[in-house]
Image (cartoon, rainbow, N blue to C red):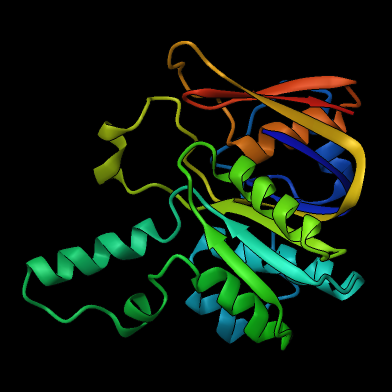
Length: 240
């Protein structure tokens, strides 16, 4: 699989990191996130919408709104490995206890709740997609964006995000699996400033310390001419 595109603009949020200067300093240091650091504010979100969204979804929608205010994308893609896992666990626990689930949890439990919230708040009837592909969710979001660009769309907004993973699920995931809310928003256009080639791995490998989108941001902002992202069975070789 080959990908080639340009990044016109970007925005990102994670514990202790929000402004571009914060992220640039982070990109030249060890690629770590202080899980217990405070989450950034979401100044673009109306209060009532923010209250309905989980932490990672708030960051995702806020970052998306920030780019929508600066640009006019033709389409939007949200990618998330775990999506609304916390809400779905609460719904299942309520059903197991024979009690009605929270109406808000029920309404916001679907995987496309975040991208739907973005288009509603922005009053922007954009073509949209929401996807999940395990550890490769961000990279598959880029593949989806490439398809949009090849179809004639000129500006595609990709937002990758995730939420805190409930303790119930932690024993079933690798020990170093990232467990904090974050969001990375990229405004993508046709071009070849960034190029990527995937390669199948001969055997599965352990996941990295960062989600793919944050690992991508670290490599790209560092100014390295090339860097590699990995998932369980694929490596993605980027050149700038």
